[in-house]
Length: 421
Image 1 (cartoon, rainbow, N blue to C red):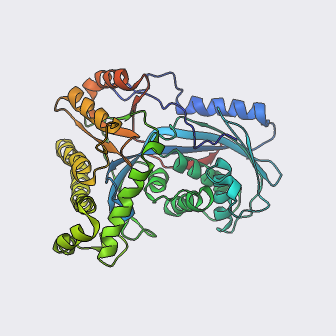
Image 2 (tube, rainbow, N blue to C red):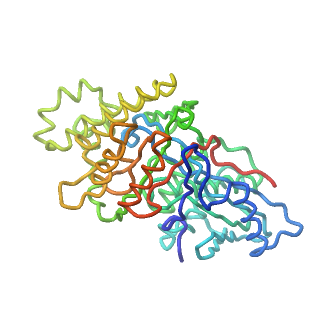
Image 3 (tube, rainbow, N blue to C red):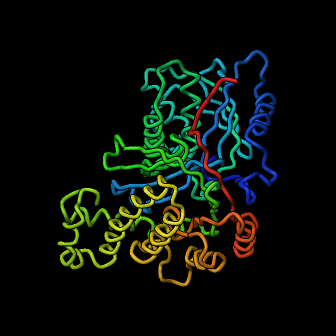
């Protein structure tokens, strides 16, 4: 059974004005196409149809700070899951997604199942169980989805899917309204317990909230959210992401070591996360930490404190509309990730993200800013590119990493939602 979150669809591209110049349809026409497919698969006569939209997200600031209880800026994007759903009078969810095998999930039992780990069926069952916890009675429905959120491309397709399912269930099953923060936590739990992947809350929160948001995860159960009214295109810059063409599994151990070493530093100082350690306490313990954990763990701790400052300063710059200050701080953050967090290259002969960042620097030639995006090592890099240089940037990066590897995204103002058609 193919899983929606193990494969992806190409995202839309945009031109220098932030307008759609690709063959992808507009949101309205995408939904119209999904209605047509729903009619072909399940029939629409006499049925009340529900429209669902759930965006992908990009990490704007805060590289490996969220799992330490720190600060992050994230933005919802115009790459999204769109869907159409309707009650079917059974106790089964029937899910059809463009390009994937159909999925049927019985709602008779909602406990996690070993055979559904790392599958879309696991996410369906998990979200159903968690929505039942709001006082709802799960009932069967038909759902057709189409996605242009690239799976594995750093835009959090799994969180977008989780919240598409959650918002559909919220509307289809009678019960109280669910806040964006509560829906995000449900998505996180579904991914952790039913899908079987440890994850923080940033991805789901960004998808749920929409727009550009500053997030403080010191109290992860009740994170502080500040919406930032900032339009990158209006400020003269495009958000570009380049897939460096690397299988994440190649760097599994390297990925795992980053949070493990940061947690180890915190544990040496008697707490769980670096957010609970004042910077002066960390600095006072450096000599001891170097002996017990080694230098790399210490430099990753140094990155945490530098990045926390840089996230806050970038928030202030965006709030003030100071794009030049934001870009300078972003360049400093990218340098910290490479030098101190060390999640760009491993020192071996295979360093795809480092190559991509270096080539992007050559193309930008001092304009805009570029940084590692997300976990690091492979995956994607993010660039803030002057609108006048966007076509050149995308063409040259595609020349090195393959046609369609680089895309321009716009911020989606609305988080995941469902509405009756």
